[in-house]
Image (tube, helix red, strand yellow):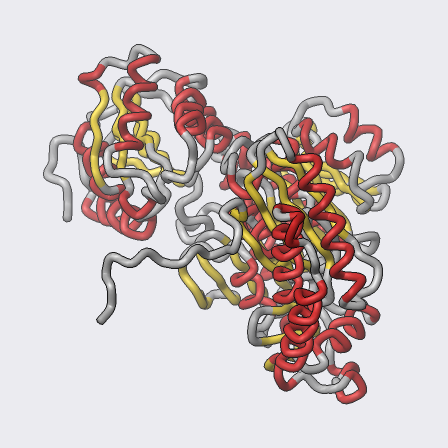
Length: 585
């Protein structure tokens, strides 16, 4: 009979172990594959424990005959992490190597590793047996400069229309792989804090204007041309693999979020170009990332895939990316929306590639030649220049597309039309007007994003202003308060609706997030009568519209129920709703 009160056994042998995972792609620690272990650690014995841990890792790698030991340690606010490089066919064993080395460091009296070595050696042999020829095929592909994509079941060499895939148990010997039939398609990585999805969609549209079948993955799903293959957040390795394994794809644009980079590393070992849009405070405390510079370093992992052959596009208006640019070895291209940017001017003067705005026009400087891409006011996504963050996005997207091979004409045509149709960039800076009420919706999920949305909102005349406010529960209270401060630091609001999204509680109790928001609003002297809490995102938007009168402006970030909200707003437009009328279902 099952004991329903029995507690589950601990996941790890030491209560100090926080997480142990494989990194099958370029990662925060190294361009090589390997395993990382995170532990909770105080200050008292940290130095001694870390030294012993690293020593035991080196001992085990030597005993297993894995070659020269490459390991890297990160000291974190509440602990430490250690990465050990390992061949791609022994990554699971590498996690055990790391764990056993930690246990030996934690208990010196039980640090005789001879029995452990025998067990780990057997585990490595068994793992290699289930991944027959994997390491040889991987190395041969790397030597040929080909992209490799790996998950727990399949290896892919090459990409898109030029890719070949095999189950891990059935990988052929290297001389049996049809190398002449394998090639890569152009691959671009898009990362940063804000603007990733918009930039991904823009670059994908540029490749489609060039006439190529284009695959892209982002936080809204996976597409190949007009066909949506997946719905949901696919900004991690899973989305990238789906695109890269699709045999119709001739160009791939992959949104690359920080979570996937930290959990598994990059999905690809090589890319033609990558962009980091900007760095904004978000997700602090996860995987030992606690500062803006550390967050920039995570985004900077894309430089490992670009390498010396590709190009890394960076935002010259972001001081953290200017600093990062001085520390990476990739070829750089810069974009800036600032009226004057000394860094960009010097880069252009030296023959570097760049994108910038001069006299209201977008200019692309490539290989010593300036190309006029059109007037900012004529590009729909900028709302006639009223959306400065989308000016940044078009500059970055145009430069990324260009350095990856998109022609100027395709870029011009895309910038002249993208944003006219609601399907171009759904859920990102869309404007709805109902009988004198203006509603702005956007993703705006962190302080930087919300501040940018509110900056755009200041260009709209309004009798009264309403803010819809909400966030997922995996941000700490300080980050929640910062969201409020970001909005009210740009403009004041007459009414605030705090939405509680039960699908995003992520460990919080119902009512906990709204309390943090309402307390911060009270601290900013927002009248209690002008703050209300609504459960559910669509319900909150409906309540916002019901509150509105002619001339009012509603600023409504949407995070969870996007499809339902956008469908309802479309119905509002179809019926010609006006203030005072009943709301449609």
